[in-house]
Amino acid sequence: MTYNRLKSWGFREVKTDNPKIINYEGLENKENKMTSYEIFPGVFIMYINLKKKYQAKASNSPGNTGFRIGFCAEGNYFTYINYAKILITTNEIFLGKAIPKSKMSYTSSHNTRAFNIIIVDKKIEKKDFSYPFIKSFLDSIKNIKDIGRVIDDKTLVSLAKELVQVLESCDFNLISLKSLELIYRISLLNSNSFKDTYYQSDSFFYIEKIEAYMRENLEKNISLDYICEKFKISKSSLTHKFMGKYQYTPMKYLSKLRLIRAEDLLINTDKSITEISLEVSFTNTSNFTRAFKAFTGRSPSEYRKKNKI
Image 1 (cartoon, rainbow, N blue to C red):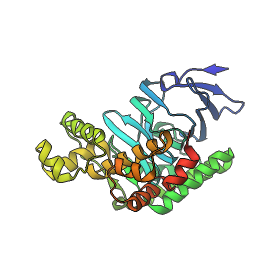
Image 2 (cartoon, rainbow, N blue to C red):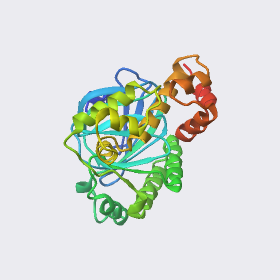
Image 3 (cartoon, rainbow, N blue to C red):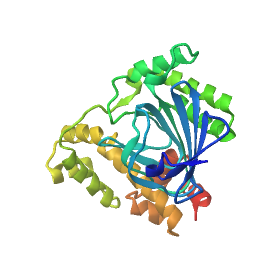
């Protein structure tokens, strides 16, 4: 039997014989798949495997609010938590709120593999063996803002990658245990290990103009000084306000946009790697290759070979 609870997100829901497992299939692209596992009371993990580029607008579905751990093993996807624009990408783990709505969600390319662990704090059960570990995690992020936190701890990122491999195996027990390990290990982090981005600003519209300028001029040699001079804003004010809206400092965000653009050019054009590096403002191809591999886990040539349409 087919359900449409996630219709506004672009998926149809297909129940399985196991009430704790639900499969999802893309409405426009059937190659886009997701699987949700209820691994503990109030704790769910969604494995996302999108073969085709994805976009959904004004998504709003029946669901629970809570907290999430997000990670991309391959590709990148953007979403909104209320007015905060969130990037979930490779080599970083995102911690934030989970809400059943978003004004827009989209991937930057084909072939996105990711997961979201969703913890609905009102549904966890004290009698379940998982409770102490879940409670420890919730205590560590109870005051989190819409913009969330980003972790780039190498040990935890490696653990997240292992979880993706386990998700691909579809082994329910292993998925449950590996997810709980990640949840608990995150709770053990000292708060200084988080890249907190707690600043919130009422002048989001002005910051959105700056972000749009950066996004539309990826080929230009843009510096922080140049942006501040152009938009008549101090460095400290820009940095704090920008992080309150887009997670990252302006220059780190710009670097990620350039590398995402490079992904698109590698897949959808026949331009050389040197040409692409120049188009995204890298004057040195070696520096571009290093940055690209750090971002995606693959060199530009490897990435093109795997993803070229």
